[in-house]
Length: 278
Image (tube, rainbow, N blue to C red):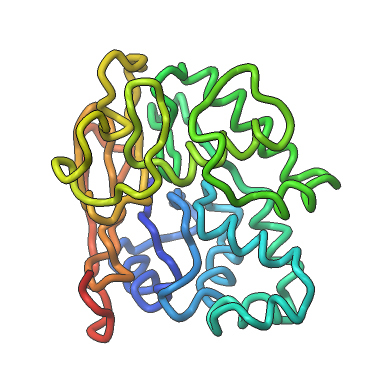
């Protein structure tokens, strides 16, 4: 039995098919972890969602910012949904859209497997959080997304404030701060305030900003973590983090990392030729 984490698919359906073939993925024995951003920009988000939904008994998914954006758009009136890009419209107006969106809404923000010794998020963790604190916060948001109150949260999803976590936050501010950390963070300052504009490789950021996993004085967790979201970072190992968004949608690669072996094992496929390099 093998367990693989897969980086941001973003609707790159042919590459996902080729990667699963290359892994010789067998749903009778193997498991897949998806780091989030299943949809948008790759051209075939509906086919991608249908494939992963069909494998749902064998998959763990952590939600990415593009996934949550899709769920937020699904709360709008049909005439507003009709104005989004054609790829997301195909999802929103599909016959099975309610089933796919309900399933997506029930996915996680953080997954921790103590037996494997791995933790997965889409983007990152607040510098001050312990694993237990991160789990509690993630579960709060996951419960809200799965509850009858999810419409209110999804309609108020967007916004760069609050830009940092505080235990005193309540209501929508608390949920939005958590979502920003789990799904949007790349760089922050020593107090955990996220810079939402900085997206380049480490070394390109403004003074006083640090990659989320390398903030001075941050909580030492002793975790092995796998994450996506940061295509400019590419495949990266450091500070206990294994980043695997290798920019397939931008003409890079789609990457899988095997988790059930002592040393990291990567399997990649190249992006389709038509994808533009970023």
